[in-house]
Length: 321
Ligand code: AVI
Image 1: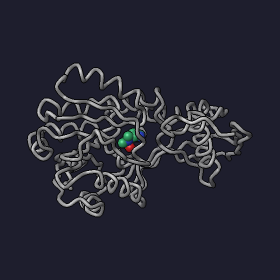
Image 2: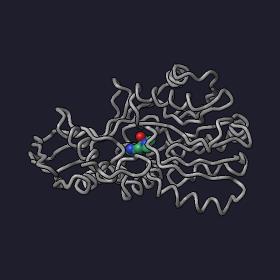
Image 3: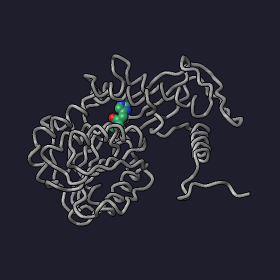
């Protein structure tokens, strides 16, 4: 018997759900358990992340915004008025919208894994900027980046702020940058934010804040897993660990078991975690200015312009095709 399919051959909802369960179970059963950082972002997780961006210890958001403000005219000149602005991981679209008055993009394309979330923001923005054509696409660009023909190839400018590139391991980051490079012509580019290596104490505090918001963001993952996997994680048994690992040049976030515990989930899944055992939930790679520029060039970008804050904590790059 043939399974019913969407007319356009997209997998059905229950097939996606089965794949999510299989992927998560694979990670949880690995000798060093892990989950993909994308599962940190359910509705509450996205709100907690927005709160993290307001914390005194979490400098990247503020530092990036200050760079955008200080070098606005140079950045707009690099992107070019009237281009196509393609926002990767658009979320609520606020960062891109700040560029609209000066940049006047001819077409704004918001790409997010959660199409519904961005769709609402795009509808509001369309009222404020009725002359800009707007499109919203639900794409997991960490896997593929095939854009529809309705998005012209000329003058595509990708926008990837927030140092989200840091959440990809270097090889995956290279693959993503290469994927972006392939979808632009020589007149296109990429505006990207990247967090730089700095004093360990500053990095540690940014990912383990005094108020415990990052801890809640991390522990909320267990609630999300309970829902996705029908699992029985007991939140009281898990604590947050967030620290800079200088050997790997990355922040690591883990959830650590406070005591021996057994977790069960859908389809007979089960794992015993010993006290102190961890689930690796996120990495956030930090670069030197040169190592990131090298990565862009390795991905096939020819010319790179960059801007930093006075403390050299953060860098914004415009890479051209
Ligand atoms: C979304 N991403 C760039 C954040 C980061 O800094 O890696 C996610 C985050 N995790 C904990 N705090 C913030």
